[in-house]
Image 1: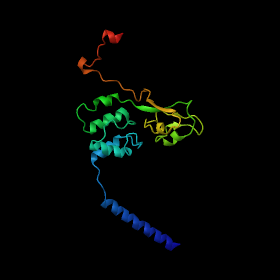
Image 2: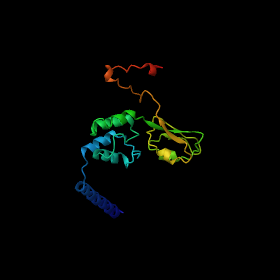
Image 3: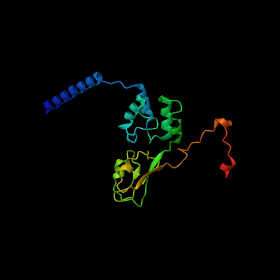
Image 4: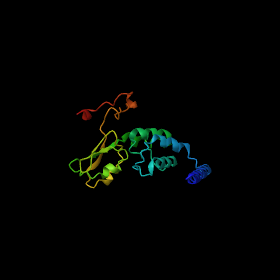
Amino acid sequence: MITAAASMSALGLGLGYLLGAAARKFHVETPPIVEEIAKILPGTNCGACGFPGCNGLAEAMAEGNAPVTACTPGGRDVALALAEIVTVEEGAQAGPIAEIEPMVAFVFEDHCTGCQKCFKRCPTDAIIGGAKQIHTVVMDACIGCDACIEVCPTEAIVARVKPKTLNNWFWDKPDVAFGGQAKPQTAEQAA
């Protein structure tokens, strides 16, 4: 018994030392921009952007192969933060970022069969409901990754714009051309 424990301990320590030495020798240094981008991304690794996780998207953005608006779960706030870090052409990303609306999943309860396929695919556990019972989505937890929409066999789940609350509402900036005030309406627009 003592011999077996000693041999397993020696084997574990020897293999641990070899793994540690290999990790130091074959370490690949990641660029600091990739780490900075990865810190801003949500980190849910949902794959909604089309890349293998948030680190894959961060590498693609650093290389210039992905737009700053690729992370749909992050929404407008993440896109604006990424636009400050990632070098983009002047005005190239200003239009799409301003138009980004956060999306969430919505379950049509009369079509839901309670199969739990959506429940199992949700990376943030935003879908609640039991087997053979109607499911619903917790709007605050949903990141809009569309993973549940893809697997729903009855097409009972759709993506909708996230309802405005005090946490996600923002005031549009005033138009600078009119001295910081809102544009005056014409008679046709007022009618």
